[in-house]
Image 1 (cartoon, rainbow, N blue to C red):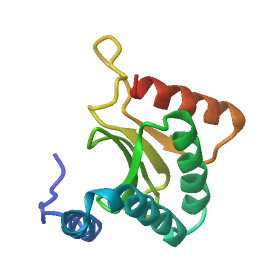
Image 2: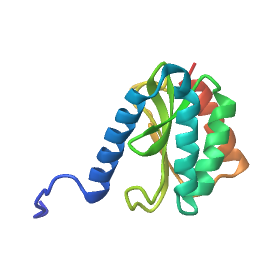
Image 3: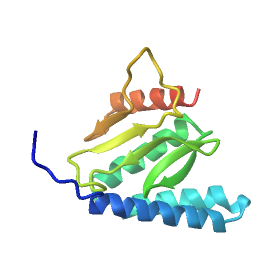
Image 4: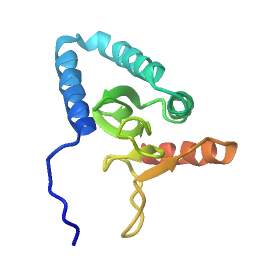
Length: 146
């Protein structure tokens, strides 16, 4: 067994928690009518702040998700672009820079309708997007909201 002492949350995790608290406060201040437009603007602004190659991946994923499942509403979730249905996050993008990982991730929450058998993936590592990967993501997103 490794001799690692737990020190709690990493600095990146603490930053994500602070971002989530700010998101919740901002949502509480917004009116119902302004929410969708404001949240999409916040997602696009967050994507624009990302370093490359995360920005390119997030921009393309945003377009794929919006086209594949217009019912999903973009919003920020722990400082990450996420897409929700009926207020519950269905999928999200986590850039590699977010937690200093070697690849970006497209993740699906338990609200996604992807259950199959007794075991199924809920997160996918992304290094780049090609036509086949984009088609697979589109199909997964459509299935997740079905």
